Each structure stands twice: as structure tokens, then as C-alpha cells.
Amino acid sequence: MKILSLFLLGTVFLLAGCESSLKERTVDAPPKVQEFEGSTERVYYAVQRAFKRLDFELVRSSMGRVEAASSIHRSEAFGNSRQITALVRFRESTPGKCEVEMWLTEEVAGDQFGGTYKKPLPEHDFYSLYFTTLQQVMAEDSGPADAEKK
Image (cartoon, helix red, strand yellow):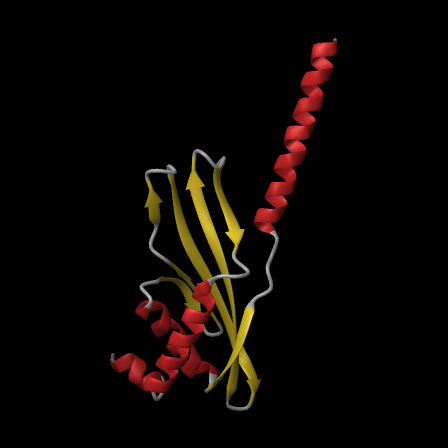
């Protein structure tokens, strides 16, 4: 009876620890936000071109929302694979300006980490890299007509 009680107590502690780490992995982080000059249509095409320039694959796109994913990075040493996914939403904030919101998530798959999980990345260097690239694309392109030609 004593062994069974210790076993159950240990199981409760183990599950309690898993629950807190799962919560940490799935807590929604606030987006990084930046404002750009241009219509929503112009920003829509520029957002897609910026992802392509950074070697991200477009997963889904519709006016006001674009999802993209990096290539999968495999680690033989750690026995896992990682991929960064990005969600960008944008809308007109004031006439002639668009507010762009971005969320990053890291997807990790591997035996050592208990399968597959997603972890929000509230702080990551990619945010500033992407927004800088988006600003460059916006400066280079005069609008959606240019994006269709290229």
C-alpha cells in the first residue's frame, strides 16, 4: 500500500511538472508591431516578397494575413528538428498607412522533447530582420503591379 501511494504521488508530481511546461510552451505572446507607408494591397505583396527573399516558404496567404515557414533544421546531435513559422496580419491604421503585426513560433519535433510541440518566440532576432527586409521591399517596389511582373 505504501509503494502504491508513493507511486501515485510521484505520478502526480510528474504530471504537474508537465502541465506547467506545456503551459509555458503554448502561452500566446503579444505580436511585434510596426507601421508602414502604403495601402493594404501594396503591403500584402511586399509581405510575401520579403518572406521569399528570406527563404521562407509561403504556407497560406489572403488579404490581411500571410503565414510562412522556414526550412526545417535537423540536428543529429540532439535528435530533433526545428522550424520557425511566422504569422503576419496587417490592416490599414490611418489613411495611407498599414499596421503590420507578426508572431513567431518554433516547432520542435524529436524523441528527447516528448514528441512535437510549438513554442512562441516573443523575442527573436528574426523580427527586426524581417521588418528591415519588408521596409527594403516596400522602398524598391512601387506597388502590386511590380510584384505581379516579377
